[in-house]
Length: 623
Image (cartoon, rainbow, N blue to C red):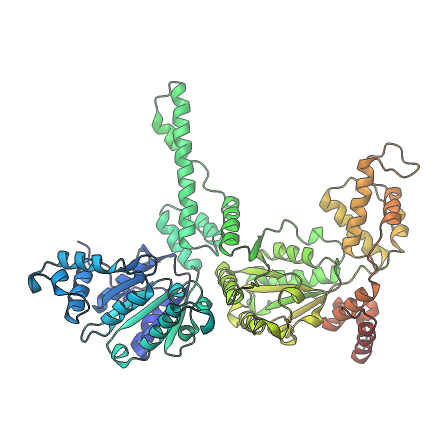
């Protein structure tokens, strides 16, 4: 029989469990909230544990009586011995009757006591009764107890007192009182509450200074590597490193599920191959199975696709996992910006974290290619990329919970580029009518973005055409170290570069000599990249639909005459005052003069401020 595992002293004990152990031993904190990835497996001491079994093994060396409460399951104990121990204790303090639980007194077998106490308690799912049972155990003298409360946010949810039911309010009050009751605190007891999202738990608990909140993060690189080696001991080291990288952001259980599905697919393939060979009187079935086993391992692309689906579902559509398929070569023009970002991408690839900005702010009028270039930057830097979608919700507490969910996933993904499109709308200032939700969300996001541990690993790229609507402190260095201005192409050559890039990207047939096209593009001052793309697609549509310019006979490609016709028919945006204002805002926010067009490069601060004031005054009142 193998000796019991001394889990509290395991060399690979997770950092969050080390933090719980040390704080419990070194302070008077006896109540903890584990939040985050609490419903996953944990790989420790050479095996994978579910959270209840892990905590049972963790408490075992201390000799504590362990009791679990789950509002969906009721009360339970780790084993017969623990259940019998609890039953005898509850009889002693008068909570249960001896006639039912210990009819033979001390001679009653443990198996009978355990069955009786489980019959009495496991049906008690309501917090009102279940917490009374747990409290009865916590108040025992000379019997140290470790109580584990699962789905604590369902036992004591967050919300205003007026909006909560009586039982929700009293459950929160009881849990709060446990942290203050001296007989519980000094009885060598321990209360551990588990919740996926801390903000969904009652503030009586989450903001109680005598309660220790500890985040359970998604598994890091080393934890995933150890788990993969455990699942597939014969895994090639190079393949293992690739799997470790591509599974970033996934839970261990999700990794296990992906690999198990693949193994089942291989087994089905082996069965099918054996059946096919049987039709041809093949007798060597071992060769068939060997062939199936030698098939290529699960492609990394398939894992990435499954990971994308899992993460987007896990975050309830709050993020979009991006897989950029283009680099800077697909981006026309913008040479100063591409040069700057190429340098940053080189720092990222080389691991020079200190030289990587915490965040990059893309500012400029709409249609100037901010989002497209951000995806190209993700491709060039080798970073995974996600787009932060609207995480605001109408329900109390849901917005903060959504943000925490997203930030936990982002942190678990490791090296990641986080794109926030239209930042002035998604996280810009809101009115005072939201009960302070916006200020709390912005404060949490600021805290996360400025965490120095994230430098070089988590890069925020925010796109906006109205940086004046962003919180000023959000834009400071340390959160957005680099602010890059975007403008419409400044000359015909710049417009031609973008036009050619659009044609390559869409694989359009074109015969557009520069000497014939430049005169057509010269008058198009103020046309953004999106306008030039619209022109190219309009010209292609005319080609395909037979709407040919005069003089064209059975053309097979877009020619200058098609482009001239599209330019004549296309109607660009008429909001010139707003675009001018957005350009001045981009100049105002730029962190480096080298990226400004020549006409703005030497502008004085006073002159710029006056131009901004004049442009703002010329805007419609709705702006």
